[in-house]
Amino acid sequence: MCGIFGVVARNASLPSGLLESATSTLAHRGPDDSGTVILRETAPEPLEIGLGNRRLAILDLSPLGHQPMQDRETGNWIVYNGEIYNFHEIRERLERKGMRFCSHSDTEVLLKAYACWGERCLEELRGMFAFGIWDAQRHRLFLARDPMGIKPMYYCASGEYFLFASEIRTLLGTGLVPRRLDPIGLINYLSFGSLCDPGTMIEGISALRAGHYLMWQTEDVQETCYWDLVDPTSADSHPADEIDARQNFQEEVSSLLDEAVRMQMVSDVPVGVFLSGGIDSGSIVGILARNGIRPKTFSIVFREADYSEAEYSRAVAHAFGTEHQEILVSQHDVLEAVLPALHAMDQPTIDGINTYLISRQTRAAGIKVALSGLGGDEVFAGYATFKSVPRMERFARVWGRVPSALRGPLAAGFAMFLSETDQGRKLTELVRDGNLLHPYFLSRMLFTRKQVEALMMAIEEGRIGQANRPLRESLDRTRTLDPVNRVSYLESRCYMLNTLLRDSDVMSMAHGLELRVPLIDHRLAKRLLAVPGAWKLDDNTPKPLLVGSLSGALPDRIVRRRKRGFTLPFEHWLRGELQAEVEQSLRRVADGPLASVLRPEVVMQVWGDFQQRRTSWSRVWSLYVLQRWCEENAVRA
Image (cartoon, rainbow, N blue to C red; front, side, top):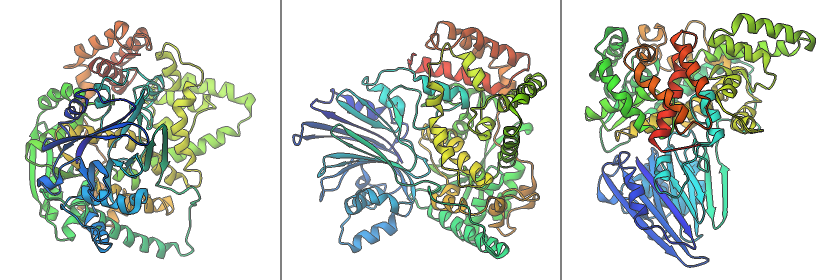
């Protein structure tokens, strides 16, 4: 697990000290080691290639795991962030082909796999990764990102330079990339509280999309999709004997979960499990237990009883006999973490503070690698959206059959009775906006389109369409899926990818903590999308496929408990401890970096609506985070 940086200069030299200073900005991601290398080529054209790495040593702790790493047989160099969980099996295959290894690291295995199979090596990998390889023989740069998008990769072209890095702030820090706010990114952020890949908040910087690789060669840059959760030609299948098929599939899911969880225990340092007391993390512990692994579990426990879930995490730990550790925190501890967490944000987001706190406390307790239950709700259908969005789809179809002459009066009636609440405004948008992409996006929406247009000074023609393009592309991939699987795909490729995974990476790596997410092993996730969505829902049991894989071993009180995430009392804080800070920050919009793009009076109206309990805390928080992030990173419109 690392932070990586790279730059290619065509017919130019790398600025003095660029490589070292850029790499140093990633020190928090890799506190154990650092390295840089500059390569020079003269043919077919003059090139200088700089590669930098900051290392968090998890596999092969010796100096042989140092990066950047060279394959002396091919001359190729690699900088790599992530873990390849099946690297032992890949290494054995490569050794049978006559390849020799100098280290015991997965980095070298990845380098040799590329030498053997080229870009097809990606088909062999099980893990989370983002890496760059300089192909010395082909004079090209190869960048790749894992199928589920667990690890980040950003890139940009600036004059004679092409750059890539684990974090946007590293690219900004080079001085080669203008700190200009991207208006399309701003629309995405206001709409959903996060940025939608491949867009970012900075004009000219793109995210390499999940399941994609990129080739840079001279002036040519080509990005290719090598994997997705669904295939373009796939279609839902309904077996003739559904009862037997469901039973067989339940056994297959159990086997795939065993494989994914066992595989992600590979490490040369101890691995813990973050235990929240819910179904997802409890299932991971149960799977380890039945495979003879007694993991060390840890839970964040609030001193205040109102926020504590200690009784549930203790129940799971007791059921499976884990070595359990509770990390006590108070509201004061959390409040103190807010400003440092804002500083850690690579891009603005309305989420992530909780992950920052958990990661800080976990790393302070001496844990370097932890398994997380992130993704269980997305692939095993745990959210309310799996029931509400299909209902909204049916409503939208019925509404589409209403004669156009009646739609206006009916829409006006909806607006009159519903628009005073946030949910009402969303429902009003559903009946009023014929261009609405899909009800799923409405369910995840922060500010409605009408509200975004009111907040922004002006939106150029076509900007909304450009902002919606990646959403529309994701939606197009779901055309052959049933409503439940469609929600699963969209939750995985939108909310999970753009919010949960991105925030988990940045906030955990801010403390040099590696988070692993076995419930979204890409082969397991894809298999789950290949069966009827109805198999994933049960009126009596949440996430029945996941719960069923434990064969009753998960305590019933965990299965039956009311769903509750790791929530923080933001609404209370915004009316109390954080009120003055947030209000002052929002008032600075009028003469700050956002002055030319946001209407200050509308921003303050959102603040006033929150004070009058007419809107949620998340809208106020999103504007506060945006203002603070732009100030922190000297970004202007």
